[in-house]
Image (tube, rainbow, N blue to C red):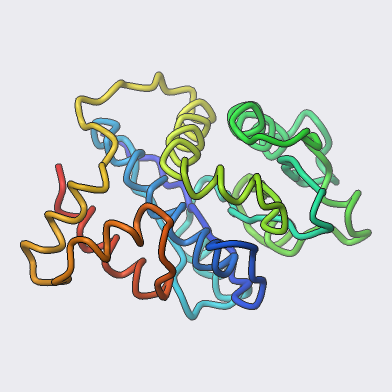
Length: 241
């Protein structure tokens, strides 16, 4: 079976800090992208999903995608603005116009994330509408590319919704990627990973010792270092069938 080769990128912007318990844009998007990869891996071995990682720069991410000869690139972000700024928006390769696969990808992702996010949404836009030279990750990656701004991390309502529903965002994004390849989504018997399942897995492996503390962390009631949280999350979810 020929595997598709999507590159699911997360923001490298580690200085953008959101309100409430959001943490940094980079850390939140790394967690999201890990879950998108998880969901794509439930699709009967159709996908070979590639990811960028902490410490990689924007340039390194683009080079990695091109070096691996990926056939699609999706960059995950959150927006910043005044506290009442809201909504989802996606960007496509402006020079190719609305007949391009970049526009199709941006539209498919927007059509799934926009109804999920709580704010008034902002549309599918050419990257050249934001900057005259376009967005670097869209302009420099070889395959069809799009960038999604899921929510505003400066909006308290949107941040809470995203933290509470991160797996729903990841699942819808994975379904949009599946649509891009004209593949029918196969409903899996694997359930959404619950907090209790994650806690049990991490305790069993000796990754954590305080169930009560980490239950509060994963439910967004206590703050933990997002980088450490991502390591725990990745180790636990990797083993859960």
